[in-house]
Image 1 (cartoon, rainbow, N blue to C red):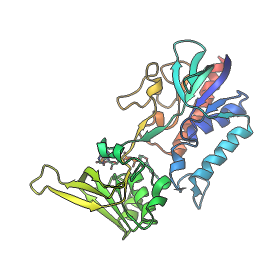
Image 2 (cartoon, helix red, strand yellow; image 1 turned 135 degrees about the vertical axis):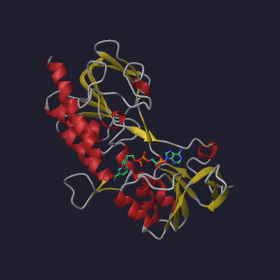
Image 3 (spheres, protein in one colour; image 1 turned 180 degrees about the vertical axis):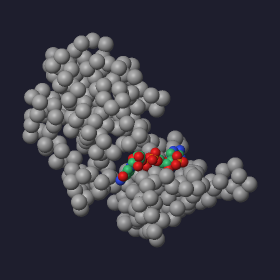
Image 4 (tube, protein in one colour; image 1 turned 90 degrees about the vertical axis):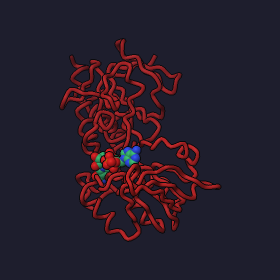
Length: 309
Ligand code: NDP
């Protein structure tokens, strides 16, 4: 059976940065990319807040370059999804795509987080036929059409602004009477004539014969002035946050109520010796590429220290 010193799971900024550090330390890391090569950032457009890019950088380009950097120092980057682990033994056992088994002295979990959905049956019904959680991936299909984005955070504002560049009209469906996004993103949305913000609206359902043709919303549900609102849209984009991809590890690795892996304060160590967690899977607070990269660096340094001891 194959045995590796450092196994890195995930290919976002945390995973690749861990790989750069582990590879440069001569640990011959193996990195499994997971479902989404390059991680969540490949679903966004420009990154304007990563230091070193005064004009911003295309997110897919940046992830491609970080990967190249990891490979240049000898990281073995592979396709595959971790489907099972056994962290009760040493070395740890890991199964890739159900059938490939390997052993690892240390594991760095950098599996990130995935988009949340509202939980409406219509989201499933119209998945890929008008419902999407990634404006950058699917916005192109809605050029000159009317769409809606759900959410009031930075992601929702970013997606709405991006879609406004392509679409005829963008509704932003916000459940509260205010946006939670950063000031600069709020201003961008409020000053865009193509975006109409529907505060205090919730989605009841979607309708349409051939894909999404509209959404039924409710304004101020439960209040005296409650009313049902109908908007004609062709696309319905979710931007209501993410949940951490920790399911496969939860039997062994301690997580908080939301599923974020609990690490030891500033150190990326978990309750399992030799298992480290970096990036969004362990970060309910900041969730920024730069923070993920930094924690990937720390995880690789901790793995190196663990192997020496
Ligand atoms: P957030 O958790 O910040 O926002 C989620 C939004 O979705 C909130 O407005 C929330 O409403 C709303 N929401 C959640 N559940 C529902 C629901 N069931 N129905 C309706 N609305 C719902 O997530 P984001 O993905 O926007 O951002 C995550 C982190 O990433 C943040 O720290 C953000 O700053 C950061 N980020 C930074 C970017 C940048 O700097 N360029 C870009 C994108 C993200 P409510 O407010 O009522 O809770």
